[in-house]
Figure (tube, rainbow, N blue to C red):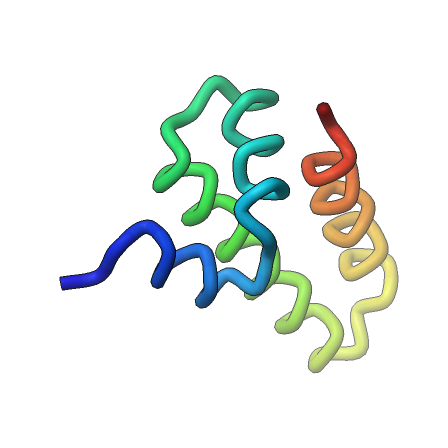
Amino acid sequence: MLTLKDCIDFAGLTPEQIEAIARREGLPEISATCLASALASQLEDALERGDGERACELQKRLEGFVRYN
């Protein structure tokens, strides 16, 4: 069974960053972790495809989430 900590570790963000996303989006922490993980995965895919515009958009979105306090 996976724990919240396992999921946060998988997402590659800190617990504080996940908390910030959860607060901003009004989500439970596990849902915020899934959102962050999905954005990170999409960012990685865009970079691999060489889609710089999409990668930049996703990076800004992810940074906006984790800067929110």
